[in-house]
Image (cartoon, rainbow, N blue to C red; front, top):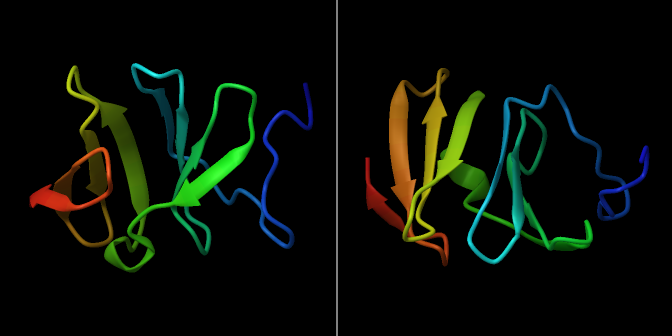
Length: 91
């Protein structure tokens, strides 16, 4: 499926660092582009970008049992825990 993800106009994935899925089947793609953390529904439709200004160099993304989003950023040397709504809970 070469065109599974429905990216916003002008957007491309750049060096994808990680992909994970939450309990709702939403897919999170963490990459090194302009909007590093992107959320898609199970059909690949773009939902939102999350916390664009927090990331320097994407490295890893995971979702925990409570749908919190965990990221590591090798450029900023930080691990972040984000709420399902995208608020920083821990750094």
